[in-house]
Image 1 (cartoon, rainbow, N blue to C red):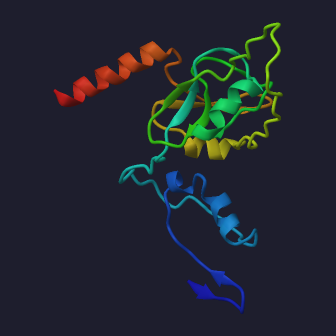
Image 2 (tube, rainbow, N blue to C red):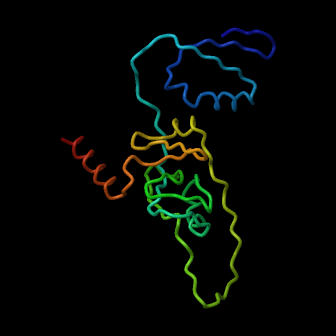
Image 3 (spheres, helix red, strand yellow):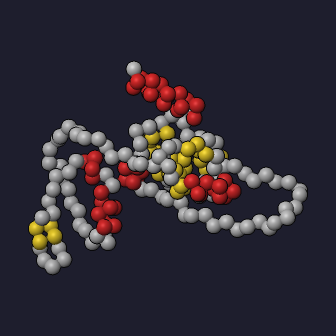
Amino acid sequence: MEDRGPDITHVVFEITSRALIGLRPRVLTATQGEAIMHHTFLRFVPTSGDRNDRNMGVMIATESGQVTAYALEGLHERGVMFVVPGDKVYAGQVVGEHNRPTDLAVNCVRAKKLDNIRSANKEAFVSLKSAREMSLEQAIEYIADDELVEITPTKVRTRKRILDEGARRRSERQAKDKSKA
């Protein structure tokens, strides 16, 4: 570290490419956008240490279709959503971050039952929290080993490697059995 004036500090350090993923937005946030970063390749070094994994699970869509506000109303207390009403999702897509360390399969396309009977109470207006949108860099940093990042012309999405919920659970059980043996 070297001081270069009243408000400027020059820092030089070595960091792995893996650790660079997601570092820039964090540094800019910490410095209120005033940091300047530059990096160049120094040398190849085999990976060392474990990757920092997230400590929260994800919410995974169980059905394909269009996201409804009715379904999100019941899910917003369980974590932060990545989708908004009207988005198209498919089974196996990560639609939110669960506020517990386990993954949770959710139905975010569930529609409200319609009938001809009037309800005694009026329909309440529900305000949903805004969805978290991730850049490509944030999505790559966010995913776990069993997840992938999808890039389309309009969206960056995350999904499970194994889309089918039953097959995903079987695979997890087999992995646990192998680790015990």
